[in-house]
Length: 310
Image (cartoon, rainbow, N blue to C red; front, top):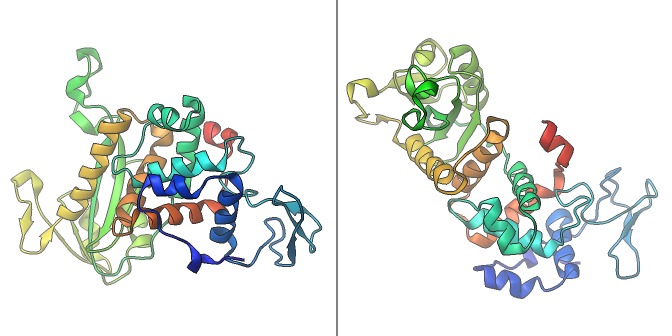
């Protein structure tokens, strides 16, 4: 059986399509990504498994006596869409810097827009990988996601601009030269933001922020804290700045406004996951990004009921 060291790197969509010509080839590749030569039962996690004969690529576990396929328990579980289309979708979503809309994806792989949207949300679900705790210089900032107040009708304008009730704050934490961790939050209050920071940033790290009052308590904590005052047009003071996380927000904004145009608060976390995954794996080749996304999807499952009902 092949192992991960035998995997090839796909430099283009053409190479991907040229290699994955049948469902059997797709299933074999997924098996390598998932089990790396040691088949494991998705029900009882026993490795006492054997591949059955025939063309169905089924396995039998001699621990719990159940049969299973390579797609059981993954994002492909119970999907009627072929793995070939799934693989093309994952490659397009992962390698396009601004993402792919459901309408565009539906045209590319010939499925309905509803099915394409479900595929996109399932893939975004596997992007939800929390990085290890940050230990170096860390930048923290928030961004409000929602329509521009200047575009609203006069009767619907919000007092205070983009900090209004119809905007969702997203907290971003970036380690300089490393990864970013971002997630939507209920509000910008210290009691909401600080516990998330404590969980993601190791004690003793240096933290740079803007002048938001929620960060005042950091100076009395286990962190070395300094800030720049954006309201006073101060953006850089020596090594003190938040330009790194602002750069991430710039990429995130172009993805939302340029591709998706509108995102509901209910599903915002998955769109944030997509941007953080793309940013954190920016140094990998397109083929490696594809395999990482595929590997993440082998231990996660998202049903349509869970997606709609939350």
